[in-house]
Length: 322
Length: 256
Image 1 (tube, helix red, strand yellow):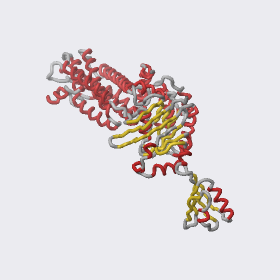
Image 2 (tube, each protein chain N blue to C red; image 1 turned 120 degrees about the vertical axis):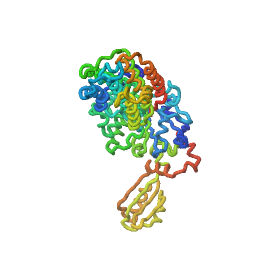
Image 3 (cartoon, rainbow over the protein chains, first blue to last red; image 1 turned 45 degrees about the vertical axis):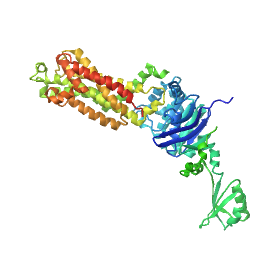
């Protein structure tokens, strides 16, 4: 028998007044996975995880987290606060509390807490243990925030916009931390609008737009949904015949700019095909650039068209089945 | 659940206490300002050693600085209950400290209780220092009726913390709490007689003052000090404010 999923949410719905924040989101997360919830600002990501975390009442749909209902009985809610670590946006600590004081204080809220000093070492905060929160850098604050989400030894950690506002180095350091957390056996839901972050960390991603799931799968699968397209751009050393290039296997479109730069889109082995053809014609591709479609391209394509969800009924059924 | 155990409350209170000590401005105003004010007024003001009131048979028995001591005690209460406490809680709300705590097993009410305990602790230190300075340094005479003074002090504290809790329950940010808190603070202190002793204020002001927590508190403390009998009405007014405001603020409290 397959193990029950850590999160099983179906048709979640939430409105604030007349604004629909989450129209229909379904999501399944298995034990040990890192699942990314992606979307633009205002897409409904945070509201979704807040309903999963029991911080917001849902208007409709069902959720089970570790078999418990986050919007249900006081017993279920209390048990979930013990077993789920939440790291949320717009949540902070008193300015003058030290790193160690905060972790030790939070540890005593839980039945089976992690060792505060070990946790600080794991997150690279040991040398900051005596520093007050107001003196921490953005990256250190985020690591402390992760430490507090983990101090109760949770089975599931929800990390919301973990690296927003961090410089590139701090962002990479934080990613390393998330990977170490996964090695501790914690299931992670990562809310983000950084595609690079999702590609690097997530086993699966769920793309949310206007309160609905528009795509789901591994980062590579979602990227491929917009076509496993590759783009080549080069400056030919001698003029080339666009029609001859277009006839090659896998080539979709060929454009020649007035300055002579050839831009070519295609799928499959298009790169090799074009290289061989150019070599045969004795043409050298100068300044060659190859671009493979990424999650970012999928993101822009799938969420770029506003009101697409109004026109197409299909996304309302775009459930995430894991 | 370990989060509801008294040990956790003790830990949270200890942390809040340490944080309070790291905030020198608030700490000074909560603990040292009231005794300092009494000492400065007692040493510098000529009215400190003259009779508090010529006309009243009881009030003419005490000197000015003794008559002003209850006012300083109400000021000490107002400072922690209407300023430090609600602003701390609203700061926690504005910065998301309460939101963060709401994700843990700790019932966030524990943080409130811890804040009240810390502020009551500061208030007790301030009151003891004020009394010590008064009795030892500036010739304040001992209260005629210490039991009434103690009861009046307790009820003034509970009713004023009730008002502070109402602000703490709803103020979305530190700025909002400062605005509400300071307005209530200065109006309350006016009725408590900080700027002008109550006995020489117009009757209409005295009539209003007795219905406010700090006005009633100031009057009840003075009654106990000079032995003017049991201030039943004032004590009932303060008990009323407490019984209404404490549950009301609990009901209105917002975590975010």
